[in-house]
Length: 179
Image (cartoon, rainbow, N blue to C red; front, side):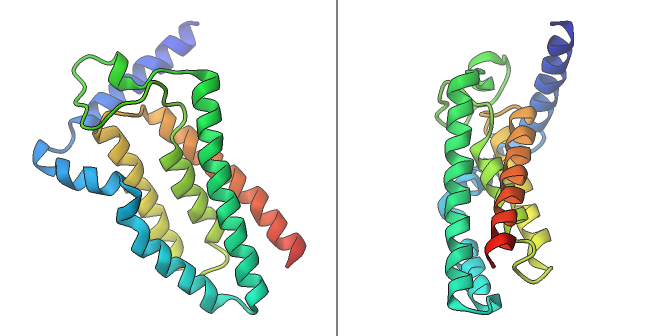
């Protein structure tokens, strides 16, 4: 248990540092960044680019279906682990933390991180190579917003990102097998 206590202490320390890294004048920016609706134009453009880079309509439809399946797995996987592991969100446990949004009870792992990193890794071989860094930066910014808002620990984000990448790799295998 001592190892987990040490990891938890570092996790909390990193969260407190990240939570206060930017001044409160940037709160509106971080509140906007964390909302899915903010990213819809980028995702619509991504789907349009995917359509342009697909050899056939069936390729585009299959890959769009894989993205939808990925989002469902990333999102529902996060919900499953949140309820199974039941690790309280930092907004319920950490003293001195600035919390800027509603805070549900459990937060391990982050669906925001799973979705954004999963999408980046799923689409990286389907689109022009310039898209991958853009999607990675979007994932990092969106994940960091969860720290600034006080609703996730860094390990929640790292675990979510790892889950997203693993699922993306599995979905890539399906893509290679069928197309």
